[in-house]
Structures are given as structure tokens and as C-alpha cells.
Length: 132
Image 1 (cartoon, rainbow, N blue to C red):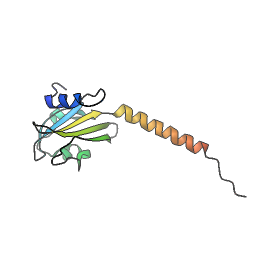
Image 2: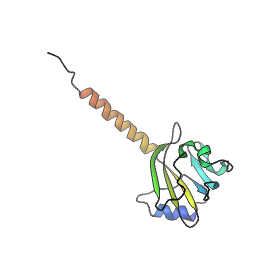
Image 3: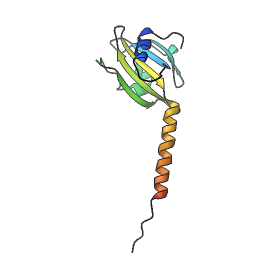
Image 4: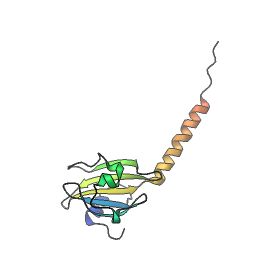
């Protein structure tokens, strides 16, 4: 992303850990897209169609965008398309409503591998039941 808005910089400073914005949408009170930048999977948010609703452009947002929220909301490990996972942060400030995307693809894929290995090990260790 070229320039990260001040609202997002402030928001990221208040998060625990080292996070950076991979993409964002800036919405008005009617949840219309006013601005966007960065990438969500294969979607370039800088060239997103602003005449469409956010959910039409990014279907995983359907039903996730609150009209107004008093506290930030984080939806973790959203599978946005076949290959990408993002944490989606929704927050409001004096400037307006923000949808922030933080890429978590690498950690999500590692978690899935670990889960699969645990399940495989559990299945391997189950002793067959014998009937007498």
C-alpha cells in the first residue's frame, strides 16, 4: 500500500504484537465504499468497484459489517478465497468506519497442518476394538 491512513496507523499501534495492514476499506454510514487500498487475496482494493456494496465485491463480508460498533471487532482467520486467510478488523473512529485486512495465510496453513497431523496421530493410536 502506498499511504496508510492515520486512523489505521493508530489502530495498529494499539494492537498487541507486530501487525501491518495488507488492505483496507473506508466506508460511510450507509456502508458505501469511499476508499480502499492494498490487497485481499487476489483482489486489488485500490481498484474496487465503489458502486457495489463491500459484500458484493468481497463476498465473505456478507453479514459481517455492523451499522455501528462501539468497540472494535476482529474476525479471525477468514478464508477469503481458495488460497488466502485474513483477520478482518472492523472499527469506527472520528474519520468513519474501517474494514482492515491483515494477512494470516501462513499461520492459518500451519495451524491446519498441525491439526491434520494431530488427527492422523490420534487415528493411528486408536487401537482396534476386538469383540470377544
